[in-house]
Image 1 (cartoon, rainbow, N blue to C red):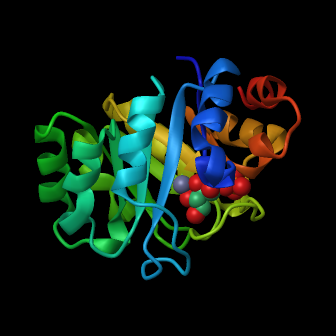
Image 2 (cartoon, protein in one colour; image 1 turned 180 degrees about the horizontal axis):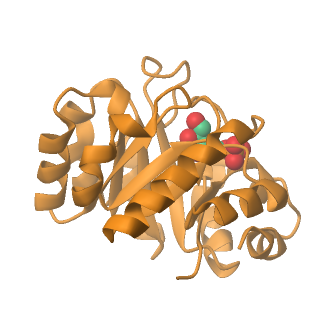
Length: 214
Ligand code: DX5
Ligand code: ZN
């Protein structure tokens, strides 16, 4: 399967989101990754469901919504209604994750779980059979432009082994500090979806940057 590239619009120009999302689509992006932060689960505030709704009308790209919020159970539906195609929440933020995954899937969108750097794969292993996607954070969530944590690679390999051995249908996505070099490490370890923000948006040639991630 071809590696999915999901540029994080956190590094786009927020006054020109439609222009930037169109540019990454033309440059070959597969998904648009949207970072939702509440200033509580992470020490930063970004955007909410109304922005997702406007983006939905501005692009055909699949919207990969990464909820870095304390109460995903309360807010996920707003994002689903706004047009999110994949809803990813953090395992560290919820108690009964299985129930929430099932609710999200029943609404007709894909469900994913993200794990922070300190959270081991064992915390989510029993959810893999029902998950569409697992998002391995390769930086501490909260900000774009941080350095890739190489010690997250064993988590990716471990997930790849479990998913292949058990033949689960679950995408492994990585997020944080991904550039042309660190992307290779993640893909070799078993990731098949790549989020990248500052690397793509600071580049003068989006297509070249996206191609270098595959
Ligand atoms: C970090 C976000 C990431 C971030 C990635 O909390 O989840 O999606 O935007 O940005 P870069 O690629 O610059 O590390
Ligand atoms: Zn993200």
